[in-house]
Length: 344
Image: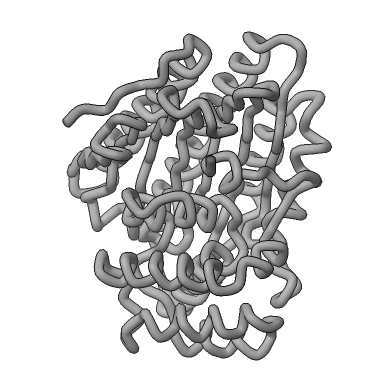
């Protein structure tokens, strides 16, 4: 069984783009592992959609537990070249989350994807956000400056949508400290749009590597208080991803052939008591979702592979039971019809 790529030239070019971004990031992270960690390279894991007939993807997962709490750099391409009744022709993406082990080194999330529709123009989704457990102003300044330079004329819109998307209403705060999100991005020049996505991806990867290289060199003292801050922040991260993140939920509802990959953004441990304390802040039926999420996690808060599988099923079951609750999830200025595009 092998992965079959989409027929269209546009989708193939997008796949080349995200594959190159994946290699750029993994190579640089492997270099950091050699310099600061246990010198263990990321390991490739592959998955297939319908035995490869409708695409699939791969991810590189961190094996260096000295340097990373968890980290995954994923690419995928799902297509329906043989199903003309579907609205979606292809969806090609890179999605990555890096959670360093050192609480003084910030996490990052990056997502760049091209959605190709049958009866409407293709569009890009471009996201990047810096997520520290212990915040440093110098990191925020560097990330903000990069977003401003890379976003160029799109920076104001991207920053505003990013802050909106990553707001957690129940806790009255945002997930991270610097956010950028463009949804449904397209102009009349497809090549210029692809170049923008490529340049943005390369630039934000390089910026993050610069930020964490500096942090790893200078922030070597780790206190119990900092580790507790990290545990609590990782709990917040899981809470946001599983109760608000529209991309995660859409991926789980579309199919169940990459649940572990979709759950790759989750950290290794959370504070279960803290997670449950937020249940009372949630509207119905999301309070039920929080309880069910907590029930899927052991009392020690470990998020292992089995727990990820349980969490994926929990989220999928919840939104099938309460489809109206999808309206309570995060959004930018527009809401993509991701699940609907995959349906007949």
